[in-house]
Length: 317
Image (cartoon, rainbow, N blue to C red; front, side, top):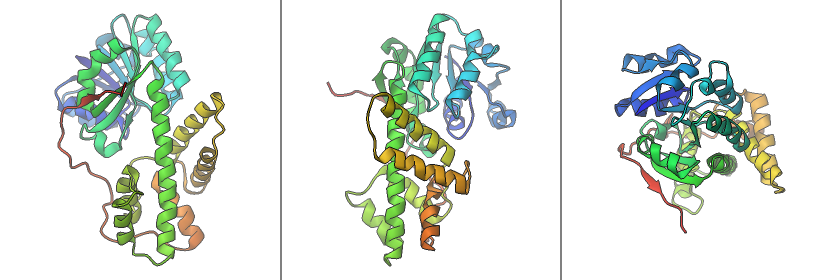
């Protein structure tokens, strides 16, 4: 299968790397052509435009920072819509808005193409090794056409239902991860001020009912001090705001979500949009005149699991 990949950022570059590493005929494109250089040096082709890519591949994947970037790539005069045709598939792997991916997907359908939303979850370190989880929304027939590709990109693949359903579930899971990050920051700062050894505190959480994926990843880079989880405050704010929008559209009066949005708005204002998201702990460090640091933890997360072919996860019936 010939694949085009647009967007070689923190997540997209790692996903595209898995495709290239596994021998796919790959064409890549990014606003920064220098980011594409390692891919081109290893056999990928350069896409002159999204239109040209859509004309020449069977599957075109976008992995972009926000809904407006995806819309520009799809709808521009030289965009994907100008080149897509019957039998070709657009897979939106960006974290985006349910309504927007349905809107763009309907335009792809009009041109004879098929549309899927395929956001990923599990961290950049797992995207790099093909061990990330993938949600896929869209027609089951379209899902089955690209399942082999998804098994290269991810370890666990879940067909979530119609187009847009994967995007709803993705921002929901990012909301949960954000809530966990903020409460871990509070727990670790409180433990420090209470005189607890932070290495012992980390292990106490890890072996307890309070453990989580976020603790086993983000708490480590918090304690190291790098705070580098390859995810920034502006992206967190985008995702939790998308979740808040879904709740509002459906009449759900959330209480915690607006607080998280306020916390990250404050963090973004104080530390910058592109600050690593775990550095939200700095709000508490500064308020308490302390540093939540201890030796022995890594500066970044590395996935040590072997790269294995993925499998479909089937929901209970």
